[in-house]
Amino acid sequence: MKWSGAGRSGSGSPERWGSVAESLDRHARLLEQGRPAADVRCVRGRAVSFGVGVPADAPLLRRARAEGIATLPRSSGGSGLLHEEGDLLWAIVLPRADPRVGRDYARAYARLGSGLVRALATAGLSAAWGAPPARSEEYCTLSSRGEVLRLGGKVVGGAAQHATAQALLHHGTVSYRVDRALVGRLLDADVPGLTDALGGVAELGWTEGPEALAAWLEQALGEERPA
Image (cartoon, rainbow, N blue to C red; front, side, top):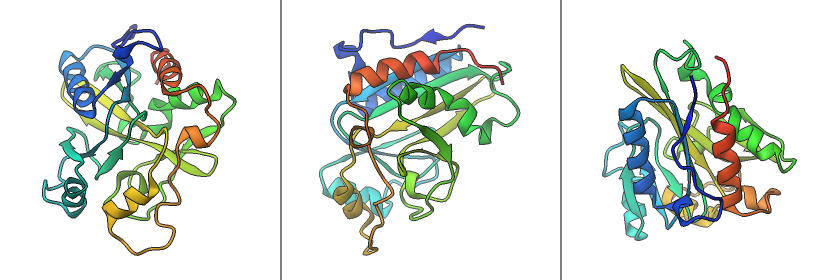
């Protein structure tokens, strides 16, 4: 079964860019369609997304709104996460009957997210999925849940899922740059070094811009890999 590139456009195309709300809506449509698909967009603007189960008046979300940042619900799990200009929002969708989903899909961060590792490797950057930093349960990539994408000792990405009876959405983010001071304000925690674990690919060796990484990533995510 082949993948479809849901966002086939040139690396410099304006279609490569979109708001967080637009990307999340696109992911929801791809999940509803239920066909194999891979999609990557560069974030335009700034927003905080939050997973199922996080109340809309959670402290981090209130602080985000006080900073003038939109807060948007995701259909997947996880806590709050800041998306900044140039970050990548990516998604893969597979029918539940597809063997690539596998019985272990809820724990298969490394397998389902292997395309990110391959895409970064095009620039000689060695990334890997691994244990989260467990520093703040309020913030998705600083929590103790799931796995995170690490590069150069920093957390540069994470992933979450939404499974229906028909299909699986596995989606996530890759940080291009990180405003650690802003994340610290959102967490409002007087903990030295709380956000030091976070990093962006632009400060860790990626030099070709977010559009080029998005193009490489969509290609890598769309490659067939057996479960």
